[in-house]
Structures are given as structure tokens and as C-alpha cells.
Image (cartoon, rainbow, N blue to C red):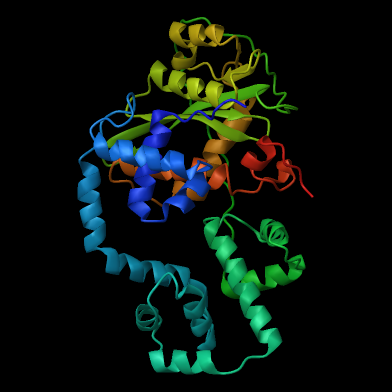
Length: 384
């Protein structure tokens, strides 16, 4: 089996995530599907050559240091806001016991004293409640409620009752969907609904375009059979961050990702190169995109020929010819990014990387995959 390919940007974002979150190395490595020893090697290289640890990844921004300092200064305030946001459902409930249940479920993440102060309950009252005996049914209900809330929060409030039911089943707990719906309603857990997307493409150029070879045949039976690609962008206080992605239609796994401050042909070429290597260097793959100038450039078309890939492009003004890729951007922005204001491009890069590599590829269940994640489906796992 060929060694896994990780782009310089992937390595850099993995190290940054480890430093930013403070989570154990083993946990971050597992989230990213990386061998812990490999990640440890990236860290050593990053620390020995911080200016350019991975050639081709670009220099680190001094903005990261300033952000870390600000985060440390505002840690207490952010913790209070996070607790209030997470406990919004229980704060609307009259019984004080709901707040006690929340505190017990989150005591490993937040200090009990802090949660009691924020939720306006006494510590003595909480500890007295915690020591009292409970019925088996009460305990089971509380555990199920907290498990549902945990799954819901980990999905960034994306999962509805159907996906939570499937996630519980994966964990060995089979629960009626009506019971899950009732608990979600009681706790104020409402899943986000993806908005319709609007595509924009710079096709006002005179470069030659390719035929629509894909022709909306979005089903793929093997990995590396059909790719779709596109560019999107996010606004930050520093200006636009442009993002190029490549999605394998087999399992809908994102296998190519490139980000930068300019929308250039190099942006899409880097994403294509990563997709080609991560998918095992296939031959004859249909690579579909819109008619944007970056995709029509000689350099991009030459790279496709070099890799023996088939170029396909949407018809003029028809965004639905690239619907899976456009839909992916819509999900990413609404599920993950729409409530954020990014001060820097590095903040935006980190958020995009987390969505793609941590949540979407490795955690998000897809109905079209039989409620498997893209990573599970891509690696050959099948639903039970």
C-alpha cells in the first residue's frame, strides 16, 4: 500500500491545531487520521524550523502570537459565554435540577464553581443533589439526554434526530426516534437547515473550455473515478481568503484543499495535486469544474494531461452541472462558519481545516453513504 500523502498545508494546520487547542497529541492524530509518530515528527520539525518547517507551506504569521496572547487574557470571559451558550436550553427550564444535570455532564470541561456562578445555583445545592440516590430510570434518562446533547454539540448543531439516532446506534444504543425528538425539543436542540446556494464564476475570458464530460452523472462506483472542483471565499478583517477544493464523488470525501489570499491558477493546481496523491495517483479520472479562468488556464490543463486525467467543465451559466461541489461549500459555510467573524486569514484557514479534515471527512454521517462518514466509506467500510 502506498504511503499516505499529506500536503505542507495539512502538516502546518495539524501542528497549529495541536498548539491552539492544547489537546493530547494522540487525540489530534486520531481526529486527523494520522499516525501519532508522524504528527510528533511534524512538531519537532516545526519547532526546529519555525520560519519554514515544511517547504512550500509559506511562513508563519506573527498574528498567531498576538492571538494566543489575547485568547489567554480573555479565557475566563470566553468560558462564561461558552457555558451560557451551551446551557441555553436548561436556562429556559424552571426546575433547578436541569442545571445540576448540565453541571454534572460538563464538570470535566469546566470548573464546577464557574458553572454554578454562571447558572446561578449554589455549589452546596449542587453537591447535595449529586449525593442523593437516584432511580435507575432517572439515571438512564439523564445519561441519554446528555449523550444526545453531546452528539448534537459535536456536530456543531447540525444533526437532527435521524442522524443522532444513527450515531447512538453506532455506539450500541438503540433508541426510538420519537423519544430523541422529544428530548431534543425539551432541551431546545434545533438542527440547522442548509440554505440554498448561489454560484458565482469568472467565465468572462477567451480561453478554450472543455466539454461537459461528467454531464451530471454524479454517482461513482470506485474511488478516483470522478472528481469535482471549485473555488469559494471567506471574508476576514485582513481581506478575502480564497479556498479551492476537490471532492471525490465516491463517498463525497474532500481530498484536495488549498487556501490563499489570491484567486490564482496555482490555488487550483495545488488542490488538484493533493487530490491526485491522496487518491492513489489514479488514471483516467474525470475532473469536473466550472469555466473559471483558473481552470481554463494552460498550466492547469497541462497538469491534468500530465496526470492523465480527463478535463470536464460545466455548461455556461449552469451551476447545477457542478452541484455536489457547490452544495459542499454551502454546507461548510452554513453548518460551520456563518456565525463567525474572522479577524485574520489564519483564523479562517484553521476553521476551514477543522471542518474539512476533522468534522466533515471523519465525523459527519452521510445518508448517501448509508450513514457512514466519507472516510469510512472511502476506505471500504460498509453499513451494518
